[in-house]
Length: 146
Image 1 (cartoon, rainbow, N blue to C red):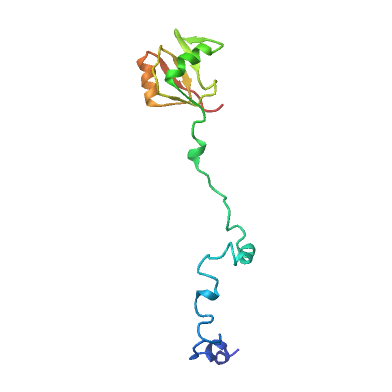
Image 2: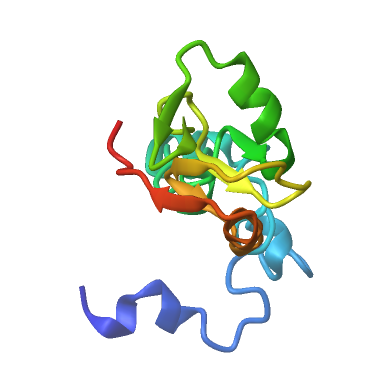
């Protein structure tokens, strides 16, 4: 088609560009809003056809939630834990507490230690380590693979 016959050329100089009286097809009212407006309302059929995955969650997840300790114990509870333990083991003359095999992931530092213990755990705080060593005990890391 010749350029001079195109509608955009023929309508030059007209106020409404062929859209009737004042204001029709002029602003965002004819588009149904600006941007992503109306995708859950009056533009839902467009959303279903052209952007079906626009709503909803998918993809990444926070690793900090995965790596949190699920079960922990304080150093103040070690004495009662050793007393209720069925098999009492010793290592180098000190009671052995394998917290990893008991299902504990982390040793926290709240409370006082009543005696020296050999402790095996996958994670521990610096305060817990200091209180165990102050009582004359030892703390060692267990392998994380269980």
